[in-house]
Image (cartoon, rainbow over all chains, first blue to last red; front, side, top):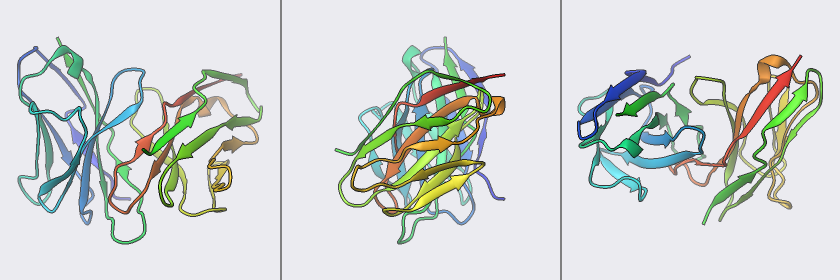
Length: 115
Length: 112
């Protein structure tokens, strides 16, 4: 069964450094998402992306964050200057989405630790 | 706005006990409803879903029925196993492209 993959599985970085989290969505999917989960808390929406542009973003997704689909397969989340509070599990998701609500499939996550 | 409320737990049950995790939602329109499960140290897996009123989603012995009149989607399992120990998230999505909105999660521990 096709699945969403994410790399790296874990990343440790110093405060102020840039990080790029990578995702490969399922190949025929059209909508892409990033979520985060701070340890022990609920899963929060960050951003959705369709047709090479952001379709919605949350208040968490400030100017430090950006997303890109640099080629036909990868979908990246960049945090330009990491803060301690960016430490979380980041999930990528994708959905084929035409008409009826389709299931959103999640990747295994990247655990980011900012020191 | 759209939101999901669920019992937060933690819930501790003995093996073979009956499980209910309550979930209610607030949404405009007719959302699709989901239960996701997160095993320790792992990502989110879709457990089951229902896309319209009175639909019953089921998987791995778990089931949940979409109740529009009570805006609920309670998760049930007749006999839990130790391997069911995980965090369970109730969630909704309102359109074909919209984000998923998660409840706070319910931690379940099943003891032998």
